[in-house]
Length: 243
Image (tube, rainbow, N blue to C red):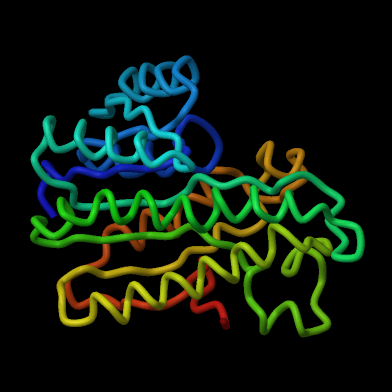
């Protein structure tokens, strides 16, 4: 990919999203910092620019149709195309989330951001991605969305706490990703799912054991796949994650 590669990272004002933007920017790419909070978004853009990244702010609330449409229009006007989309924005919905006690409204809210938000943004950006010579979509999921791991006797670092909203939302995201792969089969768009590992962010009260930069590495790798790279797979640093 050329140094003119254009990327959009959602939820990029902090944590893993910010580090993904920084990692892609270090390659000489132009990176859109998608975030709904104006102040945090612009602070992130300023910090990235100070580090030498060609960063630009993209006002984006993934739960809002008009916001996604406006974000696509902004990128269209700025660059005319999009090469890489990293769907990173996500919420947990708060804990605890035992299935016998969780408020159904919490599940709806989490799915709205973590699944429907990805669909909303992806569909808004697809016309521009189709114009790219090497389009890539990376959906940030989690090993807690792996049904295989959830059904095994694994430690909490792998499967997380019981979470009837967050974990199933990632399973849902994985399933939706595969439907995109099926529909877009035969195109040059490579679509993969990434697990950053247990990263210390405000999503988990900074209890994670990995840094945001470490968590961002797998997304950067999948965003920079060669044209003959894999599609429709679920990866972490150590390799393929079982569905």
